[in-house]
Image 1: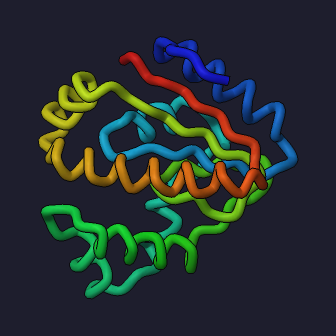
Image 2: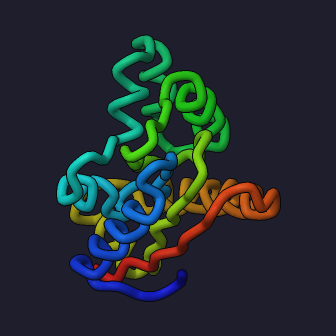
Length: 158
């Protein structure tokens, strides 16, 4: 499934994917400032990976992963913490930046121009968001090669 959608269409598409996989674990993947939280707030029953993970980590771990600029080492530590603490339940899609144990994965992509605009609005570093996006895409591609999950690609346009 690969198309370009407006926000309402994106939400409807995600709801359809979630309904199709209602008895399975679904991971919705995207970099920072892609719009995960905005979408998450509009679909009941979804879970934020950060909330599930970061409420359980130590102050030292939080200080390390919140450093800037974003690095691969920070990303690796986030992955470790997410794998340790975040567990997806069937019927409760989880939005985040790491593919955890699940049956279906939805990748929310965004153009560089729109992504830059989103980062500017949030006061976030586009360079850090871009590095994170590249790491997420690498993880996405590695999991796709295993062919053990259902994958959906959604390009955001708003």
